[in-house]
Amino acid sequence: MSEVLDLTCDLISRPSVTPDDAGCQMLLAGRLQRAGFTCEHLRFGAVENLWATHGSGAPVLVLLGHTDVVPPGPREAWTSDPFVPQVRDGVLYGRGAADMKGSVAAFVVAAERFVAAHPAHAGTLAILLTADEEGDAIDGVRKVAQAFRERGQRIDWCVTGEPSSTARLGDLLRVGRRGSLSGTLTVKGVQGHVAYPHKARNPIHQAAPALAELAAKAWDDGYESFPPTSLQVSNIHAGTGANNVIPGELQVLFNLRYNPHWNAPALEAEVAALLDRHGLDYDLRWHRSGEPFYTPEGTLRAVAREVLGQFAGAPPEESTGGGTSDARFIAPLGAHCIEVGPVNASIHQVDEHVRVDDLEALPGLYARLIERLLL
Image (tube, rainbow, N blue to C red):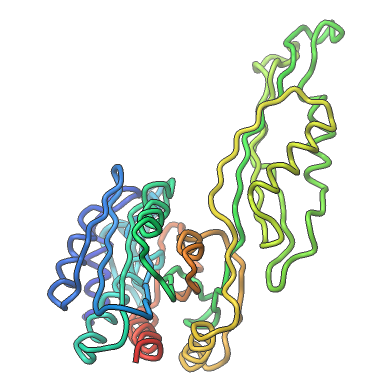
């Protein structure tokens, strides 16, 4: 068994369902300390975060990852136990194999090899790990970034190990992500009997035109490589369950995925103005998951393009698609951020897996990025 495969299996065997780290970071901190890294455990609330550094000064290159995983779902649906890693026909199965314990293991192996070969390298090589990426993302990298801002921690480049590849390792380079903004809208009415609508006020009827306008609204035409901003209603709930009662309240959950044309306050104001035009009696609560970020042309993007092209055999697609990642908290510190990782076809699914050949290639890929940036 190879070094990275062995470490990945060790991590998978620890059932670190978010936000429980299950000892993953202590295991990794021990290895990194033996390799010469200085490790700082940053615990916020119930969440473990690890900041490990080697070297000093600029430039500062951060390898960003998470040790938590999503719940496995029904265990009987898995071919094998999700927390007992198994290799079958050249494929490693287990929760977190692709998202993202394989990348975390590869980060550590690459970092160990790099500092052993180049103990006096330029700048700072750092690994930042959290156990709150798959959960609320409140006490993880979001809180770490606040602490870094307060103490003036500089970050020049950040490589996130999220599973970004689509068909083969290195075929996609993620250079940005859309922002995410969620709203909980409560429209107030007056409950009553359906036979006497003049004595009631139906919040469903009142809200329907406003919701239709929100759903049909063209927010923008996109931004560089970003798609247009979109709003999706994800849940609507009203009523008592009886068909002869006009409900007194309607609750709507929706989410906006937006490009750099917008920021959260501007979108919030736009939605509120639309609801006000429709004369609704409402409450609206917002949750800001993170602003969009975009890495322009520069050293990091150019180096990553070249290295991925060598591994994939062709230049990578450069994309801003997908959901969100913890890089959204690092980018506002002034860092250029990219995402490079294994194929994402099975993430969050039953029988999550990664090809062993891809996993064993990852340390070399990350080591090459580190060498190009810090030597």
